[in-house]
Image 1 (cartoon, helix red, strand yellow):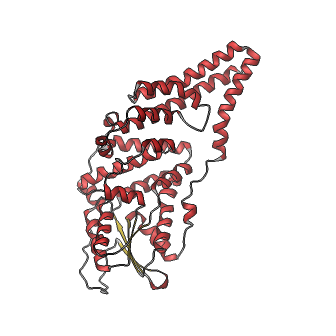
Image 2 (cartoon, rainbow, N blue to C red):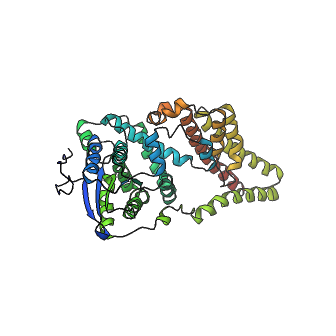
Image 3 (cartoon, helix red, strand yellow):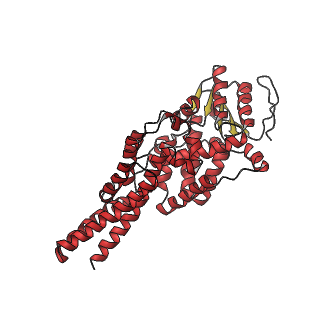
Length: 403
């Protein structure tokens, strides 16, 4: 269990517990780095007591602006502009973010602590004493998109299997596991486990954020600072802060462009299909070209429509999958899933009640069909999967017809 902090007067040098690092920065500045578990009551109590003992010039938090507002206002999903998310093609990022939030909430329910409460407690303690706070983490959307860009396609399939296993796993934690989680940053432990299997994922989710957080904290004004971060970041950040190395924040905030190979593949398939149909028409006649074109339409449209139907999408959503998939498969600009998700969101927008319960519902697979927001996600995922299958079936048939 967490070692209780002894009471002391200002300036006393009573020892801190192991999850607290005291560092000397440049210019004689003092930083107290507090490592917490995001679902631990002991961490909630620890951060308040450290802040009240230190009375720092600023409290730095492992939060970005949007996550802070989500924790403080507790209505992030209610304010969601779903059509804007779809327009920006960020649905997959949103789904991953939701699943991580659901995982953390489920742990919090078993531990009896609201996820992220220690960060809110740090903010409250700072405000009570008139201490400014600094939000030092990178925008979570940037983190997830950088992770996605850095992860090869076959590794993304492995990641999807981890996520699916997490949703389906309904086992309860043992008393020993609960006690262990109280001493650790459970979410970052999960991310580190994923990172062992997917090194590129670990780079974006852990290593880059260690560098980002350490640099933002070092640049925070004040001679006495307290920083509250997940325990999983403690070692990496402390090492960076001691070395004095600073990261290029602008570079870490940048979304890297898609690989040229993906661009070539994205446009290469449509060009190949259209060229093949043209060649078939030239050498074998219009009837043969028409037969292959019809196969392309059916091979793409039927699996995508079946995916939308399996998600219990609106009938017009299913129709949009059938009509849209053969066309979207011929361009890398937009996928069938985004077309169907937009149609489903327009026809069956989620209501406030469902937005309030979406994190809880996401942790139970059966509720994905009952919650309108989660059903939009299902429509996106299953119609996209159907379109991918159809593209390879249709392309295989057309190419084989050349010979």
